[in-house]
Length: 191
Image 1: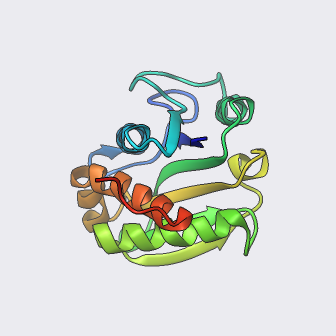
Image 2 (image 1 turned 120 degrees about the vertical axis):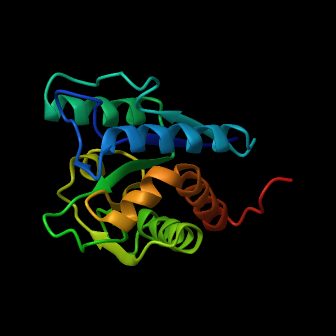
């Protein structure tokens, strides 16, 4: 029985629930691409089955912020997925803020331990700063999913060095998340 991973590519390409922008990049484009890479990596590994929230770069979910978030959660819950991973890029008014952090609803939960493995793999593979696993039970996608859920802030789109990685290393971010999943489940990479 394959482990079902729902990959939420945070934000819509435009209009409602559009994401952050910085350094001539758009969050929703980066999350879309990383999500497709990750989906394909997982679906090429017989131990996993993966779906994405957006299946084309122009797909828009919902008609406002809440309905967009609800559409993502409903798709994961109704499948039903075993794990939910939401992909994001962080932003700050301070261009010096950088690094990767992963949010979960509860400390020392399944999601928390998976988040540690994914964070460690991203930092090791892509070279971002380790900002830790953070607890935030108020985030909609973490609060309303019926499976362990985490939200990955891959890097700061407003930081020049992180933005270069988000632009150039999208496959590496996806592969690192895949590596984190393999380590969490005790799997070796497929030959």
